[in-house]
Length: 84
Length: 408
Length: 117
Image (cartoon, rainbow over all chains, first blue to last red; front, side, top):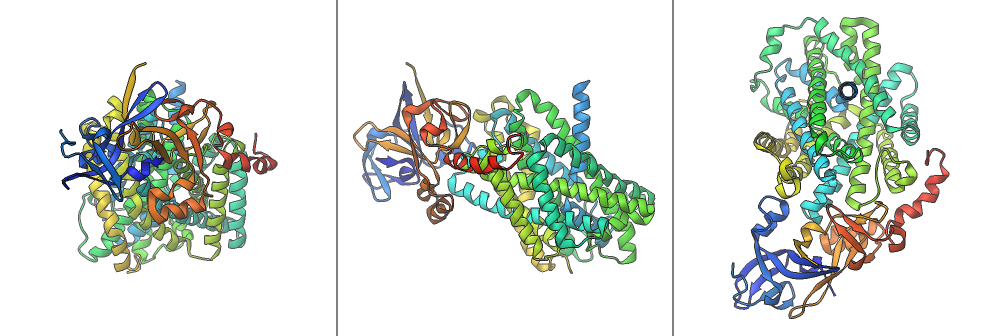
């Protein structure tokens, strides 16, 4: 079991080492009584969205399936994950 | 008809409750030091508190959330915790200064011993708040505070040079002692834009379950109430300038400030001034102690409310009781109430951005506010005041150090 | 059953919890997520209490959490009735273990006259 706080603020990097940004939030889908996590909200615009400065739907979401592993202080994703 | 009556009463209470100890100290001192040259700062401060309160009130009406609910949800836990700690420290300092002011006015009215009066005041407040319905509390202190209008009468009776007064409304920088002048600008703005007032206002709005249809009425109440209350600040500055500047008196005691009204109006003026100060500062104490309790309760998610019986919100009730006791402890050390007031005002200026910025962001968030989000006027004003608030927040402590807290 | 999408940090975390009687009983301090990379992760519970402040604000959070009593309450996601500006729960606070601070203090407060008016 992990906590939201343990995922938040972690750096999100691709396998080849490219830094996509930090994870600021988790995108979720509520179906019936289950709340599924579908992706990571990554990058500057995501932080601004949380503050309410920019629109909420215009930030980069990395799908959860793109995650290779979660280690140390970062989350490693597939190279083609941030296909805006 | 009933609504207009209610609005009128609300405005009267707002006038009586506008002046707190920060306004008393800084406005008269500013007049005593710089004459009418700082008059222009008062309308700037009044518009500032109107802008801030209006946004907080609108957020409360649309989202049902008070300031600290919004702060915690929006700026992240760490920043919110920082904002909470700093606002509680500032609140406590302000509360101690207000209690000192209450004890001093009681002393001047009764001649009893200061330290006993502090205890009496605190016990009195605790009992009154515990037992009395909040509406009566607010009205009682608000109407009693209307005695402060004696300063307005005094200001006129003193027959100041009205051309000079008028010139004071044009913003300018004093040529002699610009650092001290800047310190007073910061202090006057800080005394006008007190954070505890907006916490109190927005929490009250949530409790009274304002909805978007209440926005107009409350905007009117805030604008008229604060604007009229601001005239009392103007009166204080005029009294400071005519009575004190001319005679080289520095109003370092509340008694001296009250004498400013006694000078043109005799004993009755002095008496009304002392009663007005007692009620205005007393009412401010209640607003301040509730604000401290609101902030903590909202941050922690506890049940809260001033209309709620203490058993409905036990931790909230314990919080304001503990705050009263802590503030009493501070005042009992014998620290000068006027000095404490200056520190409280300056520190509240430094902490002001921590709650102003989140509210400005939330008020702009269209997803949160729907069509009640900031329009162009609100945003222009909001941004202008953001810049102003950042400037005074950054310069407050340096100026206080440079001018030795205005003792220059 | 239609699906709703939202960012959980924005719409759930740090929001007020209200029990079935509308009583305020805490803020959402953290979320418990089950499932890792390669799985379908789910938010399984809300974590409520000062005991959860440490991971959110470093040593200041731990200190504040300690001052606050360090309580930790886990509220299963299934207990959530609906989400609007607050998180509404299906049952009452006491059953869920929430609002214990108020419940523990209430008997003392009630002893003082005027507390219930």
